[in-house]
Figure (cartoon, rainbow, N blue to C red):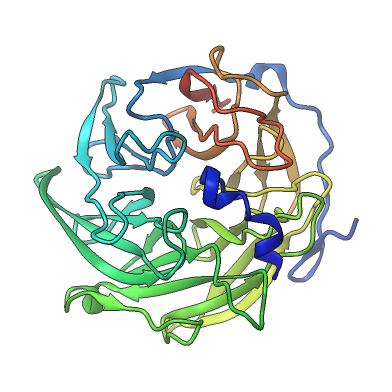
Amino acid sequence: MCRDRVFKKVLVTFVVLTALCLFNGCNTEKNESPDAAMKPSLFMTLPDYINTPDGMTLDPTNGNIILAAPNFNDPNAPGVIMKIDPQNKLTKYIDMPLHPGTGYGCPMGLDFGPDGNLYVADNQYFYDKDHKSRLMRVVVENGEPTGVVEVAVDGFKLSNAVIWKGDTVFVSDTFMDLPDTPCLSAVYKFTLEELNQGTVQLKPLGTDSHLIAKFVTTPNHREDVAGADGLTLDSKGNLYVASFGDGKIHKLTFDAAGDVASQTVFVDMPDRLPCSDGLFCDLNTDEIYVADSEQNAIHVVSMDGSLKTLWMNEDTNGADGGLDQPCESLIRGNELIIVNFDMPFPGLKNAAFDKPYTMSVIKLKK
């Protein structure tokens, strides 16, 4: 299988190891070099117990950044969710509950639901690939976690990104590992109503009715078969899905009933965008910021499918604010805040996991 060629080493090291087609035509490219004014600076140095930061979201009630850290690089530090307030003070939000089977808590993508609770992907794939990953619900009251964390959905292979649209939550699953269809990944959706009825148990092998889209990762120079990763929504409610292994960005549109109306490849630029991790759409402009983990880069994709590189740098430890395997970004005011995952996979610029553990920031021209 495709997965087996690449992920032999994952079990030991916990490593997830030019036709430009738009849905109605061809993409155009913006070939500008990165603007020196967009050079990132150091946003924050993280403590040792946050050695692998990952997902990030804004709390809509108070402007706090909520940061997930699965700590795959050094699992001696338990998974944790942190809070960064508007004054950039870092405090613990909640410890991630340990999975009863693996003994690890692995928070990745996260987003607040319409009920005010925080929903978090718990990625257990690096410790047990047998459908142990979950979607967790952190119960929140008056803007603070109560300490109650519930299993909302169980049975993913590698739950990764989480995003809410109205009363519907979407979750990406980076590997399906189907024996007859290699290199396959997926996106699932769930309504708040059904999540409130108790834990949803997914059916295995891609047969669950919550599965709304499948994606096949194209063979690439890294031989990386990781699929659906980052998720974002534009101002019209269209869903965009990043493919980690081949860099493609897929687009899903929906009909009035909320069902998928179309599924297209929105961006396919393997030479310029070989890896797409986290996605963030600025709803004021509908520009999508893409974390390119392979090239230590942040790109911006416009609604016409064109791409410009905001910043790119060579291998670094991130101490000066340089991008050190960026995985996620979001906009707060005029700041583009970026998480550096720093977990080296084969074929990436990032050659080593090393201190410091950092977040970067780019001052945007607003």
